[in-house]
Length: 312
Length: 250
Image (cartoon, rainbow over all chains, first blue to last red):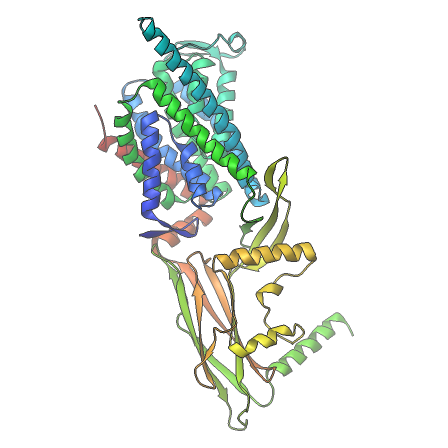
């Protein structure tokens, strides 16, 4: 059964899109990540124009993050003041991201920038995650050999300079009294990248909040999810206005697949250990990054790029 | 002679050539005026039928008639770039822009009409795909790449045997529209030739339009992008909320 996408202006197989949404939903439920960094490449590799892929994954991320965010809200594990500042700064980042996205699209360089950024980004994050989880596994094995309890995972260094910055603000829920500047910088950077690349950015936001700002782990995930819902909601509107490439039909089919996949993934995830999950995730991220790198280096089958830049 | 007067003289010469005193006239019709693009759209095929009418004074010709049908979709701007390896990776050159290119271009001709395309100086002759864009060698190369790209999608079609003469004066052809066809107004021009001379031309038109939900979504995204974006966010929030409620785990 094919369905005609009104904005992409092409027919797609509903089952293929549902399956992709489901598969990414499963992975996101399994690893507790948003999955945008997998969804967008999957759509691009399956022939959806990169502009439509990035812009349509954005509302899909809103949907998949909403249900999880509500769960954390009910458990009172959200620092709303921190989330609000991150979102406010994120609005500016999303605006800049959507604007650059539209400009790159009409200059015919969007595909290259997306491929380059994904390669750099995913290769870095993938190897860091893999490295950290393999070390954790080795430490746990060594500890078991010595007959001790496995040591708690390492906390990052004390980034003193961040805590010496001016404009301090109190975040009651996080029990923090820190400068607003790193919070604004973080919100701005992650939403800029997220809007440009079609990713929620939770997998950068969560470690950044823990290691840079020392936000307690109990509120980190909930706060990050609320930030993703806010920023990706703003990014959806920005993409709709700047490049008119949000395909709501595509996004909706992805949402449906994603909701079901996430449930299966979440129950599967409980059977696996934390560091094994992170190692798998690192491998997956690395693989997607390498796939982009491969496309950049290998001689393309078509040596010309054809872009329709507009209807006069 | 001023350019304006020259243009007028040329126009007069062309119109004289197009409708000679010995009149043969084209009468043709399309199987549909509107192609509707709904959610299950997977391409369409229009049929064009025509007859060549000869008035009472004109004597019958010994040779055959040749018919060429040219279909043009709504214009679009296209950027064609060469992929080049720089610093070890493939990136796009600045490229060339082609404005007002037809988003669909179909040339359908009767088998004998192919010879007419060999003479590029013939007046009022429809252009074949290979000569759609002019310019220097690089521009022509990029234009060729564009032609191949759109031909691969079925958007540029050139068939020199597609118009079948059912009788000496009755012809038909199919106009295949692929699923990725753009919506808008399409023009169909039919050219009638005999003995290498143009006898008549006729203009027809049809419209490709999205209907129902697809059309409303498309219109909204173009004319009310802010509203469309906010709507998309509301749908996403609702879907996420409903999904969370349905699969609530304790």
